[in-house]
Image (cartoon, rainbow, N blue to C red; front, side):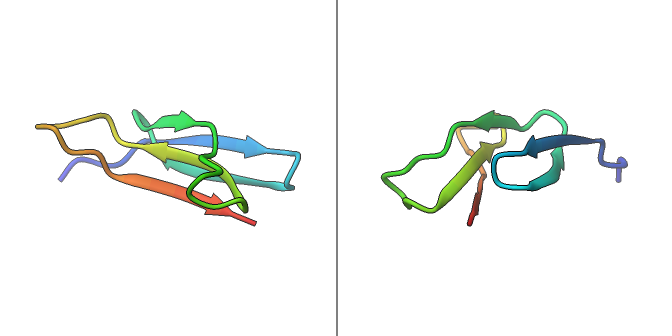
Length: 57
């Protein structure tokens, strides 16, 4: 198993920072999913599959 490399994503407007795996795409929040969403990220498609992750306030 390879070690995971992390990237830091800061959201100073909301007072937090998170670490997500390097290579994940950081996307703007999708307010249709939730009006409380503050950020979203997904993995790059691998064999047509994406793995989403979001943060809410």
